[in-house]
Length: 189
Image (cartoon, rainbow, N blue to C red; front, side):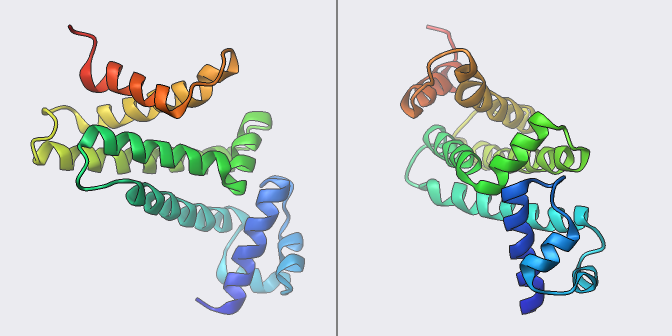
């Protein structure tokens, strides 16, 4: 990748993280990257394409973080919780995802809403792959991997984000225990 392209990506990431997508202009990115505005358009057709490129990198980073959280010696139940915890910790601590989630919530910018939906879809697809691998190894019983991944992802959002809007936040340990109880073991005695 050329130095100028990387300068543009870095500047746009910084601008999106500080000001949000809607408030970021290509003039601003050009100034921060120390390039002419036309230089940006030699690499990216639009601000939307630039955001999409940056979010693709973020998705790769999140997957790398989730992979690093897993340990082949641990059972699927522990690994999936570790991966989900890492995914959500990353999302809650990464400046860009924090700002983009805030923009979706406060403004509802269509382009940002779409890239955040893409990020969620990619994370669900990642979890689906792990479920398929666990089924192939006989670690879990056969299930609909897409539906199960969706449910795992949404349950983790509910327990780690939605719950604390009206209740005391749950510890990661409590979330792991609830996840295990309700999803992985079920409620049967």
